[in-house]
Image (cartoon, rainbow, N blue to C red; front, top):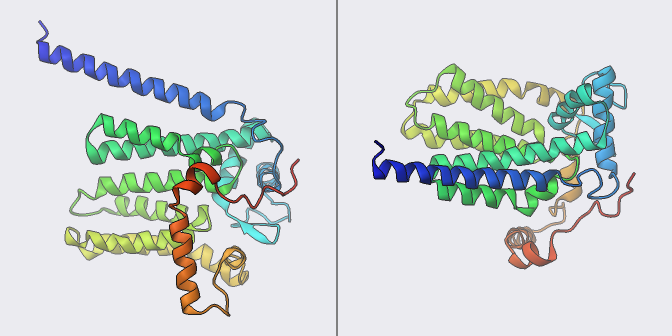
Length: 297
């Protein structure tokens, strides 16, 4: 005979599972609905990424004839490789298709939201908190809008979430094995190679591992740094062979110039930092779209 408390817990668990299933189903439909034609057209960045992914899938060379390049040269800058190689793997199965390319981004951002919800569950231990965080992530405009276009950054949130999930797991250990260190170093490397900001953020995350020294010995973190440094060797070689190739985008978008004074730099930093948290911009005005006037196909 089932005890009343046990029966109530069972009904409660079923209720949470039903609510979770409903959220996942409805948001999955939202993420894929009309993805081929919304937004309309195909931006030149989307076309460039898709074209190079198709060439890699068919010939192993990019649009400039380079065999399996580390970074892809296009429009005066270099595109990051992780998303393009993922799309190439998809194209090997489906063939070149704007729909397949956009679906890849939708799946990656959808999985990123799920990973964020799982991280909330692990940290809080509460289903209500996890569901709220999951729903917030799924309906966050910055994640949802990225899921509708073919851009390298689509893989970045998922990698960040997986890195944090893995870090939360190993944070409970008193010693990191070579396998633990290898997983962390690999995720840091993927963050570095997946998007431009990762070349700054991932090393900062690696440096942030020093916070674990209170419970870990040096060699655990040292293993991560050693393996991460080895994985960055191709990047250093590429940067040596192609000076300024990986910093060209920074030079285009930065507000820091040779003529900038320290007060100007401080003011620009504060203005941009506060602007990112401006609720009017978030809810009403939206962000500036530098690609809005670019050609579509």
